[in-house]
Length: 258
DNA sequence: ATGACGCACTTGGTGCGA
Image 1: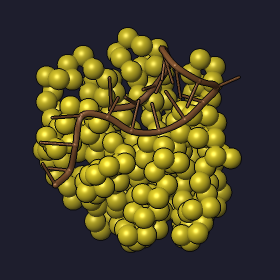
Image 2: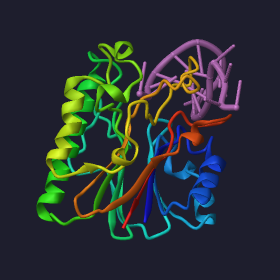
Image 3: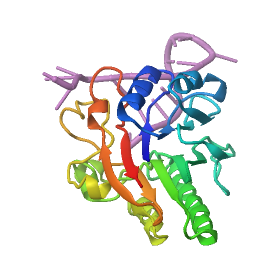
């Protein structure tokens, strides 16, 4: 089974590019982040015409997550237990479902903005709550087939950004964020894609500004974490999809599992 | 070549992104 995750930066603005990529890439399940629309605005029919079932969770122009699958889409969960709020608002940042026997989550971790912004504290709370939920899932079902995929908004190691000096005192590379991410490995999860795409210089996101993409100045912040029951046979980052007019600023990340 | 931000919105300035 082939599973992918992709922050598309608006589902509506990029729907033709997304469905074209899906068919070309022979992907069974795609976890989407930043759909930037309400449920009634999500272009579900375009996915259905391509043979995929659709589950979307979006409330306004911000955030928004979806799962599309051609191997089943059952037991859809909107948010995870204990998902935190920001300024008393529940944001659409997590959707999960059973896709062909694998519980796949599409996750859009809060950005954090700056180290002193309330959004940063929210980001850490959000990650802790996701960890608690994951620990509970794996605690009750140690053999669970689980994939936590999405835009984690964390560069786990220094080599996951092109220049650490540029990110001094920025989010995405701070110790608390990296520790919050590393804790997931304590649960037995592993990075499905990194063994197949060793760095340095391997990224999943490039800023639209300052010629970051052609200069190969990016960040590795989109990750797929999998439970021990999943055997991963390959992984890749589709850098070509970042090329050309109308690209998202993130590239799709793909894994193949048995 | 892979090229100089893009998307959304009670729409034209502002919020957000990383």
